[in-house]
Image (tube, rainbow, N blue to C red; front, side):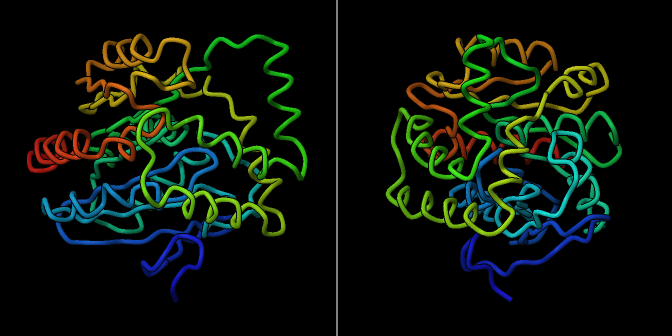
Length: 277
């Protein structure tokens, strides 16, 4: 069965207690799991997967709960729930430990997974990562929650998405955004997305001392989700004793905006982590 949401790759499903998680798999070799962030699809990694496959890895991309080919039937849509899905997927595939690549909220889920089950996570590549709650004006926080609380949330998100790409948008950006919007317009998915926007990253921040896996931090220097993106990236790298790649001109999706710079770093990091795992 092929997915009409994520593209031509063959979709498979991981059974969880309250629903199913959609994923696909490409290549062979040591395992890499790619986790998108809130409001995104696993096709966010469409420029990353071919490079990692060519470097000799099995690359599995998954959708978050209530996104893409995953069900919107869950009672929880937070970092911990997503991290649990990552661990369940690694166990299901039976090829761990894995390098987990996470973007935005997906990076928080990846870090929580590494803290919870270090035996299953060989390394972390954290892209535009939310590992703690950023300072936010209470009025702005209320306005954001109101914008994301109703049936209008998909349209609001679609209109906001271009702002997260201050650098170069890919040629297929409009098609990708249309796929996101179509996914959110299915029954129950706008509500699941709205619930995802209420995620707190406090449970991840509380577990950072338990993360001992090698870490690569990738951050766009112009990421609008952070008041000072380079400073946040340096904090994460120092906190987790990781490597740091700052991508000039890029925003929240540096692996999409500047894959020529990010992909070689990801492939080299994966080789160091997994070939020594």
